[in-house]
Image (cartoon, rainbow, N blue to C red; front, side):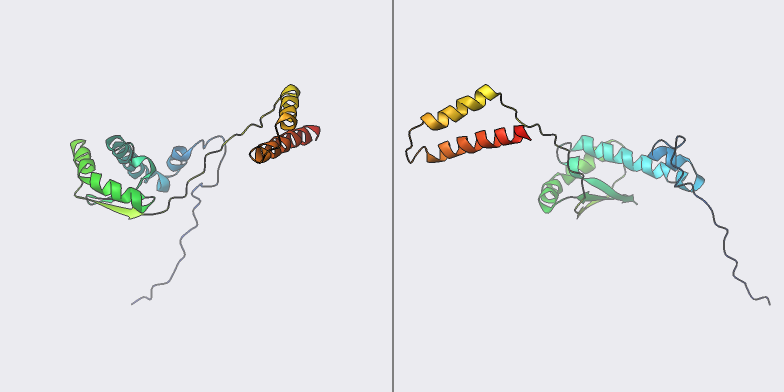
Length: 170
């Protein structure tokens, strides 16, 4: 009887790092080699299910994701417990709507899972007031009666004028 010997498998290159003009997106990357192309039907099926869920419950499903769908059991990732509680009440409606669209779903489970999201980029513009407006605000701060009620307003006007003029001189 022969003793089995270990022979390491030959190294294969899957082409993950061939970013360039031939690979333009995630689907192109998945199609670029046989191992990754086998994932495409599952990716398409889950994307279609995600779309149908979003159509069934548009307001609630905006921040939810499908984690798994196997054997008729759908597992959803929910970002917080409050949304999970609201969505739990809507599960019969979601299941009925998905079954109407042809999905065979026997159970839906929710997993509260913090999903890292990219914060939207907020572009801010600095308010630029003309010199005439600055002069008017400065004059207002000197014309207002120096009473207890006006102290905070006068101080705020003076800070605004000083900040605006210092920022402009830089």
